[in-house]
Amino acid sequence: DSGVTQTPKHLITATGQRVTLRCSPRSGDLSVYWYQQSLDQGLQFLIQYYNGEERAKGNILERFSAQQFPDLHSELNLSSLELGDSALYFCASSVGWRDSPLHFGNGTRLTVT
Amino acid sequence: SQQGEEDPQALSIQEGENATMNCSYKTSINNLQWYRQNSGRGLVHLILIRSNEREKHSGRLRVTLDTSKKSSSLLITASRAADTASYFCATDGGKLIFGQGTTLQVKP
Image (tube, rainbow over the protein chains, first blue to last red):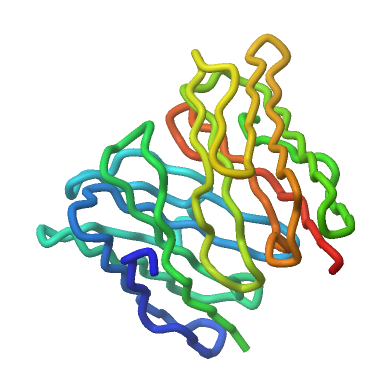
């Protein structure tokens, strides 16, 4: 058990809808990362937060947004969903903002129909 | 791009044999990390090697880093069926970017 909790585990929704994925980092970790994993794109870095502040941004679509709250949990909001957004979304956490191993949650599997 | 590329994409070996996976990248890095993923599960961190290190060991794992060639290798010695998984390198040059992974199958 990595200590990173992601909810929900599975999510099925329709195109055009909006969903929120939630992540609780491992105790003591200040950084939270979001990744998207799909068969054709591999593991894509979306965004990183450190102690509430955005630290690095990857290929995150404008329809997607994220934040890290004062209690360090994070949410990833996906809106105007398209079929191509179907993927496994991982949250990971680390102690520092760089040079630290990541601890991954078990992911949220999103299916857009 | 900074993204690491693993080679081979797939590897199938017998239990007890060694498995070697390679990773190449394009830009300067602070560190390189290796992760393992069992099907559909979260990734598990294996080893982090910093840009000023050349080799690192952890149990049956040995990682090398050659910054002049922008490449790294992961060696798993005396493989076991339980090592069957996908292995990813991740390069840290400000963002932690993962490669496409090597799928390793270890046959009992």
